[in-house]
Image (tube, rainbow, N blue to C red; front, side, top):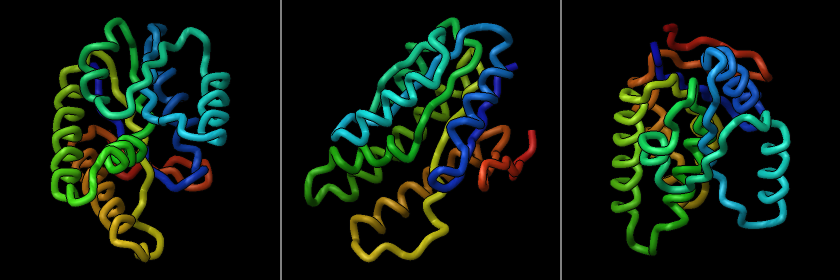
Length: 182
């Protein structure tokens, strides 16, 4: 039976590694689909994307989808035993970057629509879905309005995904802490 699992944590907490290991155990020997949301905007992100590609097994199918992850989950993961979406926070960032000045309300509505669609797609997926996201609310209140908007929208997205998930795991220093058991 498939399930929706949310893996949260801070930067370099081990979220991606844990999600990938978890997907491997859930796939039952079938292929794994990996939905990547990072956009290669500079040398650092290009290097990070290449490093992540090298770390994943060659048998994994990578689907690069920066804005429409729900559509990719619904239509491009057939035959997979598990799906990893890494990461929701970058998905929110990509929607923020696509926003024009004065579209703050539209930004939040677009993210809400994508989260709704992601939850629907995960619930109907034939495979278990592991979502990776950053916990953005544990630090200082951001100084700039746009950063506060991002933090608030990402935090609400995480809350909605956690409510819909069968299981939620919070990563701390590479250690998984089950917040919402199966």
